[in-house]
Length: 503
Picture 1 (cartoon, one colour):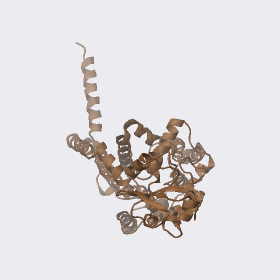
Picture 2 (cartoon, one colour):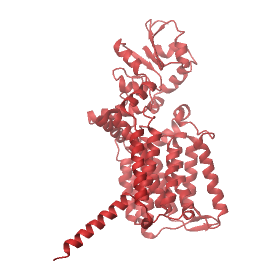
Picture 3 (cartoon, helix red, strand yellow):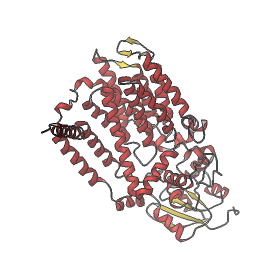
């Protein structure tokens, strides 16, 4: 009797056992736990005001097979040039909607929110060399990401930042060939989100520090090998070229610079661009982490902090404190440093001593919690109705209101999606409205700093769909030329009673 079948059967069973142990491993269980955190965080965050114009843009690209480079949704900008710096992410968002409607969009958000935390865990595990401590890194990334989690391209952008850092880590620790994934990454990233520009700066920091070799107290720099430096420089040059693979060339490459340094109204008026309050939990955590790193390096004589870490932490802290929507950048960078410093404080993960049964229970529990927490379609529709002018839009359609529409900044995105037959006055695409001078006009009008009729007459506005209870809505109720025709818990509609030509 031949023993070959027995040997083959034994090998097959052994291979199956190894595969099961990998699936039911501690790192996979940690990924499941992070997914639970992500889903519980985003289940009530479906209706972000900017989600709707991203969705509409994705629909235009999907159906028209063309990437728009001028404004299509507002009558006030007169088709001004527009930088489609997130077009690829917008197509992915619309693709999710096309496949599953509101449920598909929530699946998109849960998947990318989970991926953001899990990628943070993988990055910190590789960078620190300790998969157990890496869980702390994933948790930190999740915590700081709670400021930005929504159905918006920025989630993809920050995920790609983690992928970049992971490629740099793998290229340094395993094989320099990992660096050659960077140009492909940047070719995708530049079309997904403007955070690619910060990715280029991070890459430049690593390139510069790769040539340094010194130690001053606890501050150190380790020179990379000649082969590593060569591969990194080639990959960096190719990455700089790759960002020009976009619909509008250099304008898209420089768009992030324009946002931070030339769109002054956007970064001062829009709430998410304002400085991070130090009494915010994430502000407190940011300062606490910086203090911990400084004190740890001072207290532990053998501890070292590297030049590239100091530079990245400084940039991340500046971005996070200056603009609260960017605090996630600090979270990703700080998680790497904290987990590396603590890598030796906890015994590392040993696959031979893993407990598949316990991990299986944790994974099963994670699946149950995710399925139970996932919102129903009815719940998603309720979230939209509670935060968007759904009923007001129904009124406009039912009563066939005609002419130019004035709308609030917050509701503009939803109106682009739900009321496409009426171009908006303004919406969350604050950049194009600042370039055309509309944004300062709206800011002055919304705070009633001048006669509201002045702007309404200039743009020949026929009706206004505004947020109920706002200052300008209260002012409009006092104007003799305007009549309130509709009101609900979210919105109020005013219709002009005289022609725009009359004073």
